[in-house]
Length: 480
Ligand code: SF4
Ligand code: SF4
Image 1 (cartoon, helix red, strand yellow):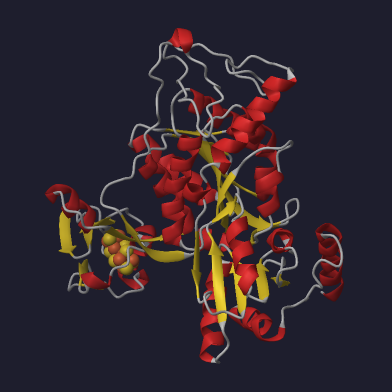
Image 2: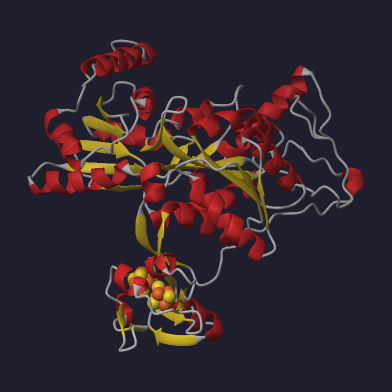
């Protein structure tokens, strides 16, 4: 093998395989490569390489390889330099899962999440992990639960229709306090909808898709960098609170390619193990504000796991006092730690006359629109939600207490707007910018809402939030 050049990326050509066809040179968008006198590729501008891997993909002989040289150098020297990568959101989420210590994945490929499965099918076996393609999403979620009970940090990925199929077993994981991560890349629904078109329509399904009152944690990245970071965080929260965590991406963030800085060392999430002997172990102990460590099956701790209401030992119970205590425990393990769970970013809110609330890819348009509004002298601000469930109620309420107008921008017909209306409860006017037709909300649409008051201003609190939302939804559908 010949190392052709060293830059941020090391580009290697296996001369014995290369037939000097020039395809890698032709397909390099950065003009990193050129052909020498014999038509073999040479590197002429290594610093421009962005690791797009176009050269690799177009090489018919598998003769060229691009390796992050910083990673190799950093590992050799024990350097703390970050790895610079160019990747899309799905790849970042997959890499984040691996960095967090995920070693089991079961799933059924579905657009626009498929790359997560594709990448993990290659990466997990390389590092001693397990990848299983299941027959459907019901089985995928069941396999993830089983693997987690066996002691492996486990994940699956899907999109709308697959997420619907996972709901029953998702509820089982919630009830049995089994940590796992579900990456749902939202596309247009309902039903098959539009497979390749992005949406943010699964917000309420992520919250209430499985039946019964239950806690849930849902994270919403708005960039590729955040997809990586929040994937790691999803595992942290999942293990700490023994609960499924949903990484709720959208088709735009999942397919977007951006420069990402990965930490030099992975942030491995360590699962706590019980310290008490098996004889006294209570796997579902009602620990106030906390959880009992989960003993892996096969480690000498024998216990019962059931989706039925159960006591601290896992056996079914219908005693109201036990069920009530169990419910208090399930709620308090999340509610007592909101400061550690909730995450948002905001800018321009302190002196704002209008604040735009958004999440995911829509937050990118909002940032640009707020900048444009400020340039015109309009006091606009933005709140980008990163933990969407539990909803940051107190913070939104505090904003509403001092800002007269709130605009909610989301690629659905008003799901988070309904939540904002509930929380704001008349303290501020709430308006919405919504679309669910497979296209992104543009900065121009948001700017227009900041200036003119949104696509459908709603008179707040003259109706109940539910009837208000229904009316607004009908109006929007009628208008389109
Ligand atoms: S990875 Fe992309 S930018 Fe780098 S050499 Fe290959 S084609 Fe060019
Ligand atoms: S595409 Fe592959 S075979 Fe063709 S010149 Fe480049 S490295 Fe050689």
